[in-house]
Length: 413
Image (cartoon, rainbow, N blue to C red; front, side, top):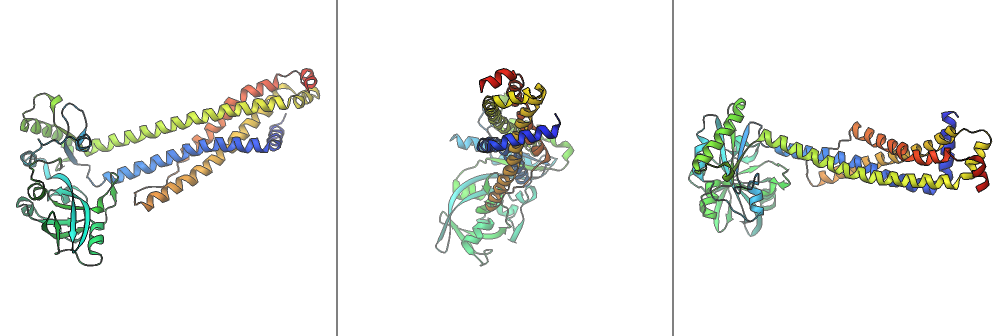
């Protein structure tokens, strides 16, 4: 039997069973679409996270508090557990600042307060940042300036507004030089940042920045920080500088056993690599889960083809009686399965691209740094996997059809 004849016969058979064919194609297509969407979303998520991490230079090192003996918990996890670590002091920051390979250091701490201006109230996150933050982070000033080291050391009541905070409180008016109130204390606006977007699922335009020591002494009444960021001079010595930081922190906190470390030191290079690994793992896990659903769809195809063989027993017997060979019958049913899954695969790819684009548009609406990326690999994987399903799950019913005895098949009808 010629291949084109087998394809034509398979097409005619699927056409006669239009409803069953369409429903099977849709079921398989949804699974294929899921693969495309997950891989596209994985690329978009990776782009978003990596873009957000670009606010820090690759030659910087982060030191965060952690719960001793709890592994890489970090300050965020400590807060989530309702634990406040108070051992990271300003003296530790100054000790790190004196390291010969450090060009800039800023410590940080956060709070949440009500910001007031002329009767307008806004609950906002306050980032207590050191004055060197603009040398370590990518922070551009729209108007005014960032506060100085002298203003930080003297715990001056100065504030830099995020882009959205300025827009909500001042509108088109100039904010620089005006006073806003935090906990009944007046703070002078010295600068407004340019629009920064979201970082780590957090809107960086809806926060305000004041000197770390100002937040400690004038608002919170504390002397500790959550962590610091340091920028090195020689990036070739990044790892050795990290080891020096660990030594300094242990010496400052009188720690001998590393299991009792109340801090975590990580280079941004390590953070980027770790994040990429985690994202890749999540994507692979989701794809594996989707593949399970595709296997279930494959079992459904086997069942459908099996029923088709049972319904067309007389047809098979008749074709064999007039000279069709067993391999002709085998190929006919295999072609049916492959055509069915290929059609489902194509439908799934088109659906997946459409849904991926919709996800991209939603992400853009919510100001996420997202990218619309459909890789050739994801399309080939989807189509290849759907074809494999057709072959793998179509073999058994095709063999069953090919193995029917023509006399028995005709007599059954």
